[in-house]
Image (cartoon, rainbow, N blue to C red; front, side, top):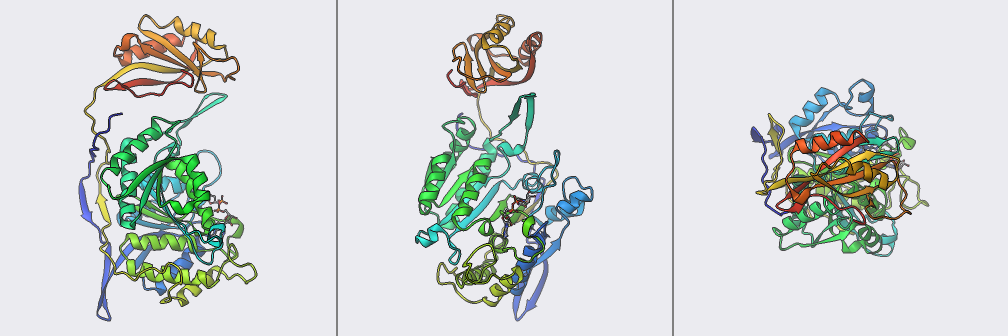
Length: 517
Ligand code: NAI
């Protein structure tokens, strides 16, 4: 692909700077600007940990007002198929910030996770998860004196998370994996900006472009395109398996890591393990319009209703939200009190010194409140002034179209026909060759991505679905009609399960080769 600048063709009707100011009061001579956000307490332990976090926010006089909305499993059960009421959706779309507890995905086919739906519907394209050594939370690394401060930025919309899956035959399931240039550009640009603000020394792209040359290759290409705009940041890349190995041996060498969706999901849970587990893993889903702050963990049904859940991950997510809103003073006060509390050995049942009694969720929150104004010995956060809340709410009347502009020549030069057959490769080839009509060459047949015709190995195990690649003779441009005619001819001998066009841009192939081709 030819690297070109991105041009976002977006149909945004109007923009307004949204300070979400709902109440300005002069207390003690200080003007307090209240910001209103949507809060969904969630399912399982959600209400317990959310109440604990909000009690800390209230005690710290965080200038936020909360619109509590209906979202979660119980809303699915009331008959709302996307797990939220229309009022909840309207609240989030007008306020732009959702602070949420974990939510249960009802079991059974056809019901999508509300967490994934929310992230995708509102285009929160960057999932930021910050992992740092927390003193008082023992891990092999903290005991070895190896500090960890890693931020994972995971693409949040695309990849296999589109959930676009089909059974092609009774034996063969297919998942479509979309990686797009504009989508990659959004998340990678966010990662670089965030790394710059964080004062990071290094930003790394994790990928598997050695195998997925077009999809991960595109993500990596965009990474280095954006890197040119940040010459002061050391930008490098690493294959994701090597990244996992290095994260568990030398986590202190990483700073900001950006990855595609599925790889980012796995790597970020690995990083949660490095700092003490899911109870300490916060998450921010950042979009241009709406951002969602939540813990990484789920609803913990095994401990629900017992007032023993650890609220740290949700609290850290809340602190990230305060920073996002420019409420730096409150964020620093609460974070210092949290770090001090952890250092002093106060702990819920899931972590800490087992020889000391654990405290309840409520008592853990109260301990933090009692420690306001105290500084931890390790990594105290500097008291900084609030910054301007630059969050914007866009009022849209059309869906934004993200499009990268490329002055290129596009040509269809062939087609991959995916056909069902339990016959041997040479028989499949014979049947395909009957239908080329002096217009196509049959160039390769593969099974599960491995070439089995014209050359192959009898040791390659087969399934009942082949990919037959037809290319136009001498690279002639094909029309849609040429493809449909071939499709129709092939149906005389096969069930055609699906097809993909073979596109070329400026003579560069937009498709991969089969293994062994
Ligand atoms: P989970 O994260 O809820 O629980 C895994 C284990 O970690 C359990 O033993 C649990 O007790 C423990 N745990 C989790 N959070 C804890 C906390 N704050 N304090 C102490 N211990 C904690 O994962 P699981 O069981 O796979 O999922 C349960 C439900 O949560 C499912 O319906 C799932 O779909 C949903 N879920 C929701 C998420 C979200 O809302 N973002 C994320 C992950 C899962």
